[in-house]
Image (cartoon, rainbow, N blue to C red; front, top):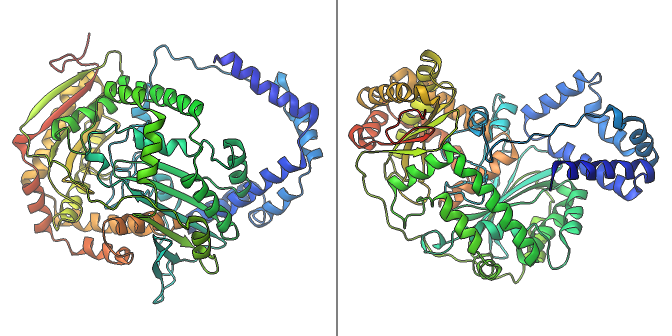
Length: 583
C-alpha cells in the first residue's frame, strides 16, 4: 500500500473517534493494560528510581503512586472531548520517508548505540528477520536494562533461604521458581529444545515460520480476540525460534498468572495455522530477508560463518538468496508437521521469578498443559569444524557509506570447557564496549570508526568461534584493518595486564549482578544455566568462577585459541574484489 493510503486510514480512525467516541469496554481495556504495564515496569531498583524521577520532573512525585488511580477515573466522555479538542487536522504534520533504494541504509551506525556483545554466558540478538543462526540464548540483559539498573547490588535480591530455588516436574515440564522482592508480578522464561533439527538437512526457516504463526490466532480465538485478551492483561507473549530451541517469555501480574498460562497453552497447543495468514507471513519474511542483500554487516557475518564452518554444522549460515528460496518453498504442511513433532513438554523448561508466593503456578500448569505430549529429547549430532587456514574474502555491495570488517577463526571452545571463562575474560579486555582496547585505540585514538568490538559465538552446543567486527569508511578500510591487526597482534603476543584483569573481573561480576537485579535478567539467566545442565544456584557460583581465573590462565588461553597466521578476513561493502574503494 502507498503512504497516502495509510495516511488516509489513520485520519479515518481519528475522525471516527471524534464523531462516535469510544466505548466503555475500550476504555476499560486500555486502562487495564496501562495499569498492568505500570506495575510490570517496576522491575529492579534502577527502573524504580528512574520512574520516580520522571514523576518529579513532571511536577509531582506522588504521581508515581497515584497515577494509576487517576487513570481509572477516565470516562468515554473525557476521551471524546479530548479527541475533538486536540486531534485537530490543521495542527498536524505528516512526513513521508521514501528511500531511493530498498534496504536498511544506516543500521550499522544505529547498531553501535544498542549493540551488546556476548556477555559471559549471556548473549542476545533480536531475530531481525526470519534467519537467525546465532544462538539467541534466552538470557538477554539488554543494554537498556543495564543502563536502567546501574545500581549497587546486594544479596537481598534473592530472598536467601533454603528454598530460594524451587525445582520440580509439573505436567512434564522442568519448572524452577524463585521468590524475589518484586511486588505483585512475575516474569517467566521458557524453552523447548529442537533436538537434532539444526543438523538435519531440512528447511531451516520452518522453526521461525512456525513460531511466528502462533500469534496469528488459535482454534478457539481469532488473532484479534486473542490479542484483545492479552491486551486487557497488559501482557505480551513472546515466542521465537533460534537454532537449537523455541524461546518463550512473558511478564504478568501475579493475580493474572492463571489466565496468562491458559492463553500461553492455547497459543502453543492449538494454533489456527490459517493458510492466508501463512502466505502473508511468508511475504513479510521475504521482505525482511531481502533487506539483508544490501546490508554489509549481515552479508559479512554470513561470509564469516561460511568460511569457518562446514555446511552441516548448525553455525553455518545460508546465503540470503538460499534463505529467500527456503521461505518461498516452505509449506503450511511442513509447519504443521514441525509443530506436531517438536512442540510438547518432553524437553520444556520454565523458570518463573518474582512474587511467586501463592501464585498457584503448579495448579495453572496442570490445568492448561495436562495431556500435552510431544517434543523431543534427542541430543544434537553435527559435523565439527576444523582449524581453517587464513583467507581473505570481499563481498561487494555498491553505494554503501560504510563497509564492515570481520576478522575471525574457529576456536572449538564450548561454554562448558575449563578454558572458556579465562578466554572470555581475555576477549572482553580486547573488545567489549567503550572500555575495550579496540574502542580505545582504533576509535578514540585513531578516529577510524564509530564501532568496533570482538566477541565469541556458536559455543552453546558446538565448538565456537572468535571474531572482531568493525565499520569503516571504504576509503579508510585498509587503514582500519591495519590498526585493528596491530591490536590483535599485541593482544595475542603480550596478553593482558594484571591491572586489566582486575578491572575486567570487577566489571563482569558487577554487570552480571546488576543484570540479576531484574526478574527478567534472572529468569533468562537461570533458564540459560539449566539448559546447559547446570543447577539454578549456579548464579551464585558464576561470579566466583570469574574471580578464580588467573592472569596465566587468561594469557595462555588467548595464545592457545588464537593463531595469528590463521586469520579469516571478510571485507563487506562498497569495495572491489581487491578490497579497494569502489569508484
